[in-house]
Image (cartoon, rainbow, N blue to C red):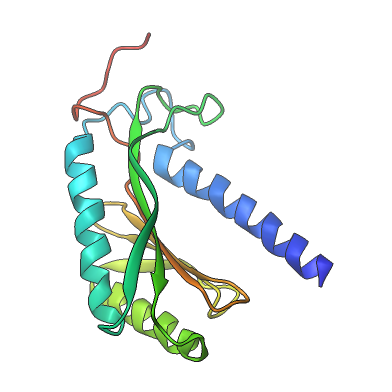
Length: 171
């Protein structure tokens, strides 16, 4: 059991690092991330829109409790080789009011919704515990997670963006 938990934690750490690489374009050259983006205000609007839209995949009795919120989170990681001063929008919701026995069906419903709405699956392992997807058009990502108690969590985040939409000169 301990090995399984440690393995899951290591996997989550790897996924977070991988997501950071994807969102910042760390694999590119010197001008990586210097392209114009949407503004952080638009990123926040899209995070809210995706957070609301994906709810059509789950039963109407689901209750969404906002548990974490970033409207201008830091994307300046000096180890990613991307430019500083970028920001990210994200929301984390705990989904309540649904029977834990039906968790597999919720994962199936969200997976189908994502695939029908332009998201590709980045990871779905372990099944019915972790599902991670990315919108192929705009790079926004969603994660659906459950735990041993049958609690569900939905995380929606933007890619790294420039606050005003245009790259800022290096400081």
